[in-house]
Length: 181
Image 1: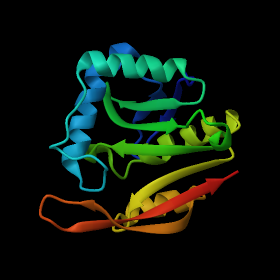
Image 2: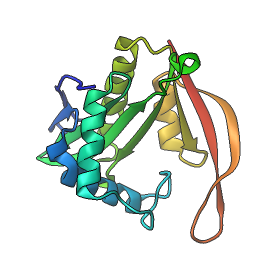
Image 3: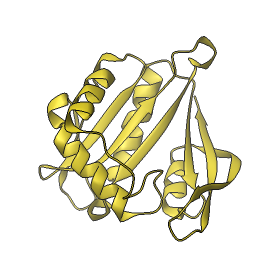
Image 4: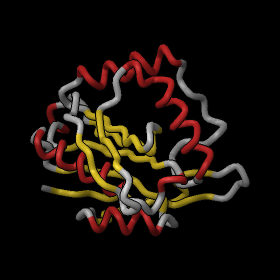
């Protein structure tokens, strides 16, 4: 689904534009994914995970625009993608009331309100779509993200132990969180 563009002001006074990515944003989107995957261990994917080709990303972004049950947003600051978020649901009758959220913000834009802006807008989109609950997973050690999600109204409902295994052989647990409308 194409989400209407919106401008917000970040904590440092800079303008941030939130908009749905289009197929022509595929290369910039891949650059952002590549960067976020290398900047933290708190995301599902890491630097050794394969990225789609530019053509595959273009097709994926077009599919997101065409799908009335999904939505994606990019945050642009000074012409660069600062972060992305997505709302994804399954087209299964028993699951139509719920959707999952994923979010990633580039390290250079942490603590500026980019994540809050992306999350607030994707939650608003979920409500407009008639979604009754949104769900996410967050690494248990990611205190900043957990605080943001709780600020937005998410509550934990479970713990997935050994949810991910890092390159050094250590494990990370994840909290499962939900926001019901």
